[in-house]
Amino acid sequence: MGKFIESKQKGICLQTKKSINVGDSVFYFPGRGMFCMESQIYQEHLKNGAYSENSEPEIREDIADVFVE
Image 1 (tube, helix red, strand yellow):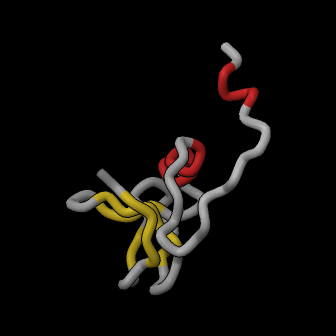
Image 2 (cartoon, rainbow, N blue to C red; image 1 turned 135 degrees about the vertical axis):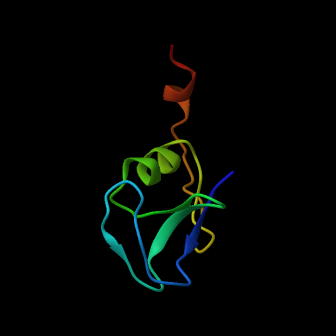
């Protein structure tokens, strides 16, 4: 299971092949690698409610749309 972290080393995004620098926000899968902010993997995990370890979770007051089928 992956998580959002600040990169501790330089690397390459597995999906976009863009450079990742130390301190960049990435989605990290242990044993797989890092995904940059522009990657679809990173964006999908943001949509699914995952948050960076350095940010506050978004507070939603209008949750009615969550229950709409």
